[in-house]
Image (cartoon, rainbow, N blue to C red; front, side):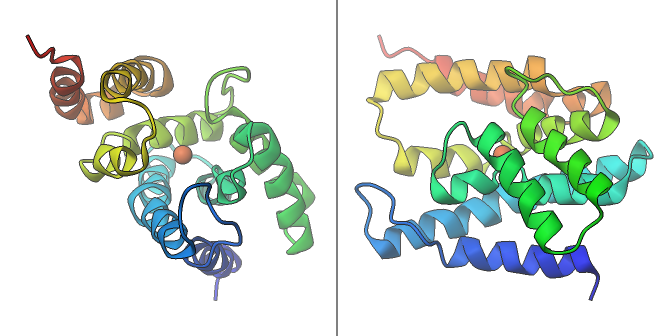
Length: 197
Ligand SMILES: [Fe+2]
């Protein structure tokens, strides 16, 4: 088995068997949350990233591992998940015997995927940031988010309206990919900005 494929199986297993209990959720609910997180989010980020790596001639190993590990700190509910996750990803890759230079690149991909304090610079960093944002526009994503949201309803709508604007305008670095999700962005924007009179 390809070493990254093997690691993917291990990370998938961790999502299906989380080691923490989310506050306010039973163990079964926590398990369901992370299981859906894997299926709805992480898997989609891997898929989008691999497609873009091929299309834009990026380093596939860096992109694949970056997508796989970009939210690794979320598995233990650790924030800031970009900073903590980048260290965790690096240590995990070294422990698994991956090349130090590769691990270093993946570390930076994880650190910069949120486009906040650390803006993406390399092609691979831009691909993961874009794929992460694109995956937020897949139909099940916000249905999954609302299930676990603790915000009141108007706040939930406002926050998500801001989130999709940021994802769409600031996190997608490729025009064609932005166009691919334009329709879904407009539809969600209408939903989140709808005001009950
Ligand atoms: Fe993510």
